[in-house]
Image (tube, rainbow, N blue to C red):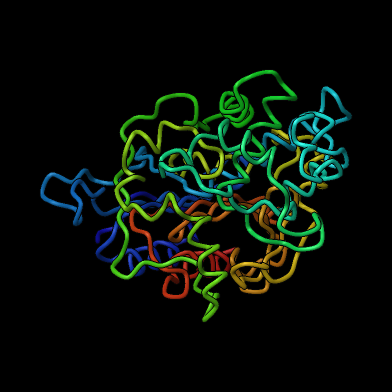
Length: 376
């Protein structure tokens, strides 16, 4: 692959790393500091067919957009932080969810807090029983209604487990109850406060790049030999069991806050650069500080992955998800996407791949972030 784009003086090592890790693939990597773009690299061809990039595949350009998968959760977390404040008109992490959403108090959940939902400790990692149609996993309103009647799997706040899809159901309903508006529009408007940032949730996106899965793609690679927990993982990620669903309008027009957002790498890098710069942030400094302070950490109770969460944001963790920088926040996406900030450097970055690779065999984002760190 011939990398295209540009790098600021002194960042040539990032271009070299991008060309190496993206050989035979497609995608983009952007880095922004303040209002300045330090790295804007892209290349390959956005695949057009079910087996890969054919002769009619589109070149991956600076304006190419793609599904963010769980990178969408970082957008939702940004909106929640922007709305932080005392109830009932602000979203207060210390308040019970039922303060905003009375139906949620059913089945022993009357004391579950907003903060526990945002930090993945609410004990509601899947909708049980699962709806008949896989595509219905993307319906945040229906998912929220089901979860309101469901009991938690453990005492909320005592265990941490990634709420892969249910995070979106729960947060969407909270945003709806607080604002009285479509939560997708709320998220779009908050992030659009940053000049040059455009994401698509409620707004129909331009045709996003097709996303492929590498042969043997699998989820939850930290989990080994436990059939019960593997079954739980399969329920959580049921919507990803259909490799074609992610490339259909049913997915990327659903606006599901857990994983259906669409954006380009440059928009995501600009957003996180603004979050890292108090003078430009769409979130008040105190609210962002609280949202990026550790609220839950440890080993995931379901899939054994080391975790560290703020209020909706992933934080720098023991396995180096956000590179060598010790202070970081953001959100990763299925198959290798990595979007986040190094606040002490005032840097935002986004790696947006066109191919999903298995976590234990994917070093693309880590290689790029290491190269970036050496250039600072």
